[in-house]
Image 1: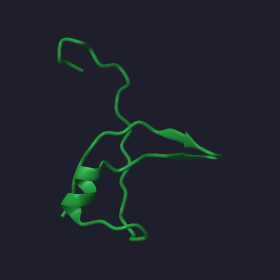
Image 2: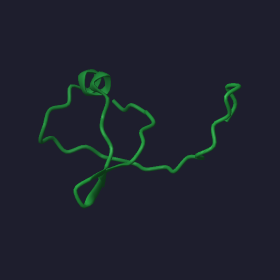
Image 3: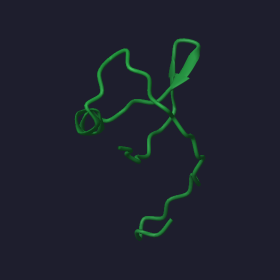
Length: 53
């Protein structure tokens, strides 16, 4: 099973990180210490306020 979501990169010490929403963790039955495959795709920064990006 896979899930897609958008997250902002954050700084944690000297590393960059993203968090996984709790809903996704529950949906996929993930637990701390498990290995997961991560695919990264950069998206546009600009988001208009009329619902179009």
